Image (cartoon, rainbow, N blue to C red; front, side, top):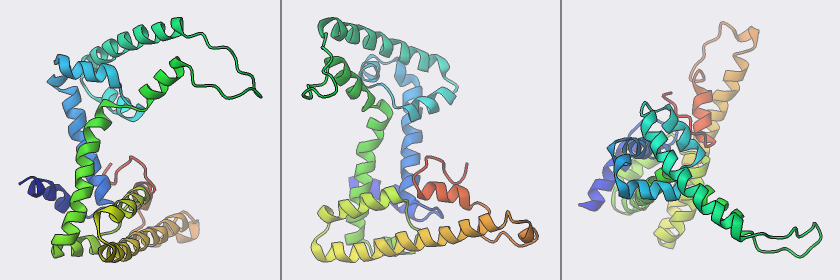
Length: 241
């Protein structure tokens, strides 16, 4: 049952006309995670305890700020900053490192810097997305091995973005046996490079269309190529925005 539940969003994404089905899945997960974070859950003590500890990345802070629930965001940030002030004051008071100098032996990071580094590397929303998205990646390889229809969907897709190309390239090495991995890479490379080259041509015509000599020429498939190119190179902008 669990496998079937995860195959539904994977199948749906690869059935959609888009530049990267994995970006589409990630976008849907992000939307659900934001709705959960900004919904009634922010009033629950256990969730507030986690958001106080993890905080939020800059991208998700920006999205939450655009949400209508400004009070919910203010409450989460208030208790988060309460915790941050208290803990960082304690670290700042107890740790007084000396300047090491440019040519001195490299010392361990001060406790305050380690605290900030750790805080900057965590996000409550990202933490809700990652385990499910990792499961989607596993499901892609499960379906690659078991579902011929999915293999055709994958092969016929418009490709994937560069970041997710690298992710699948790496993950396939452990999820598949040698023969399966070689077959997968052959398809993955074709899908990725065909998609990138197709879009590259659309971008070329998009640029040429801004030459006054091409004013009356047809846009062809290039009119929205900039938005689609942003998806390919890893932007958080999506094609339908």
